[in-house]
Length: 301
Picture (cartoon, rainbow, N blue to C red):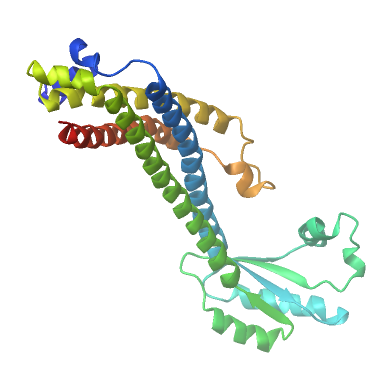
């Protein structure tokens, strides 16, 4: 058998005599289980937030990067002519995939969230909007503005740069905040388990002294604490992870009108990410308990 697997198997099985050093129940056991479960539950949501923010940043970046809008403001008698002239300019512009003028119904739908469904679009001096979809190579925005100024003086090109950059930057920072939250959760878990391990070590100093008298090494004693607290953290984190995943599943599914708030969840293979949380919790618990146990055993007479 692989030596690594052998050591893991021995660690999981443990030693009955050594396990007696660590109390199976009590304050430290409850603290470890609860803190690991609570932190794993929060880590699931932090992970979902980070992944959702990443999807949002990618979607906003790709969608807004390839779309532009031309707004035409002109007297009523010239609006149709300038719209037609702008469309002809766009047809001969390199880098423009498609361009079309929005209908009155589409423009009303865009304004409806702000002004309600009864907005009389036909009777208001609302500018004509033209939707422009770019090719992958894109177009020369400055050159297009010059051509539009000559052919359709009332046309204003908005390439969405001033909208795209702040949105993508905000989504990217939200993703970083999610990962930073996971790191903080890991640090808090380590602190909680260190506190519980120190309490258990302090409560069993007499037993540790007896084990030393009969020849037990500090590494043997420390391994008992490492095993117990690692398994408790794994169990608690597993429970918290399952509860967090269920809570994520109960959230509303992604809806266009709901935007980011209804897309907070896992998609596809991203559902495998929560499974790493108990493993990471176990690693953190092992490292924290190992450091606490060895430090305390060195200080004991």
